[in-house]
Image 1: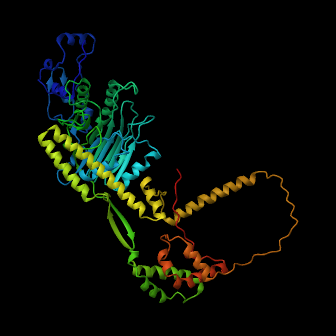
Image 2 (image 1 turned 135 degrees about the vertical axis):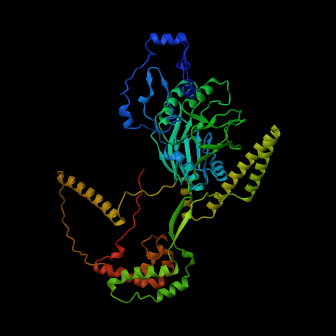
Image 3 (image 1 turned 120 degrees about the vertical axis):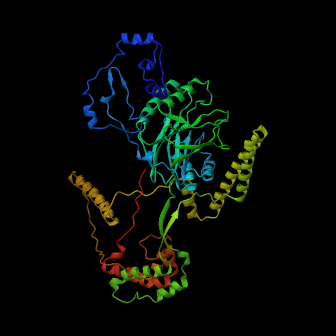
Length: 598
């Protein structure tokens, strides 16, 4: 008996076809009789009481096109045993973004990101993408990626970078660049052999979408992959996605010529998508690959109005062209960072010195001098450079962009419009030559900007600059804590317990027999510290680095500028502490930033 294959739409049409059961049979009479002989096709009789319990508890479904009011009555079947199915839509599907700005998404096969960071950042800035999925990132997942990721972070501070490298082989890999206005949660992924992918949930304001980035390597003798294996594993993935109630977008490079109707593998792939209720939206006459075929796809459910305005961009340094679209979800809000700062450059040192001379630092007991010093100087700093709370919006950072690049980009767009209008090979060649010229100008401008930065910075600034250019930024991670003081106490208790346990272990050990013959006797004693003079304190302060922390009453630069007026008071505090053996309370605090070891 021949194998029969049905799509989802065919099955729905069979269900909603004529009321005659004979018309519903998708088999020939001979096949139907054979099925009866094998006891596969048989009538099922149910009692009228079979559906009484079901009426008490309605069954909720995620999405259905079935009409719950439609009733049929055939011989041997009582449809009144079935309860009405209530259609329950996901909140994500109800809140369709009909007004307001919408999010934009693009996918691109980069064929190695490492040498194309300038083009990637320029593409995101120019097209104002919110999400960019990249296949064939060629990232390694170790320290060799630091310079690439740091370069992206410096140019796109408002974006998150996530990637999944290929395991045990070079090349491949997928990467995800997303606006920080999205809340991104990675889903658990299965290890498939025939394709690489990332699976993440994106939430923005009241909208949410699940995005999968897939790269399917073309089968070869080296990787021993087959289309059959991909169809089996991809079908398993689609079955998992079928239970997800919200928006779903699948992007990436599938390496199927879906534009070729005679390609059997591509036809089977599209039929597989259709049977699962998905559709692909890329329909470009020139394809997404330089050979004219459509390999990079954007896929979504057929029942949800999610993807629109699909188009293919040109001029990128790869065999593949980026594919962009608009998602019917709310665009993420701008990323804002709150910070507190002082305008120290606005301090007039001469006026600051006059105010220091009028301060009542000498009045009162010497034991309270450190507290008066700290309180009075903080108040004076607030008068000359008050602490201001600011909200900074993170934006793209491309200071190397010049008027020359702007003119080159305008010429490139002009040639692109001419090429799209005429379609001639000459205009196409001129356009791609202009694209290559623009990329070269972009790389040169970026190199010149960094070269000028390196030449005009000091030795200390040079290390900070190189560290920022070659090392990805990371926020300091601290454990959950109620207050800074309680966290410091927890750290101290941890190390105290660690030392105590070490001592207990050493105490229980049997010490070796060590005998030392001490014949000489020391007559010297140490009862007090010598006081220091102003000149010695001055040298120590001037040799100290100019860095400061939040515990300092005034910045170190300002202190060094006003040292002549403050030096006697600092010396008095030091000598009082040396003579009494008491450290003032204001000097017992320290700001410690933990550095996690790799």
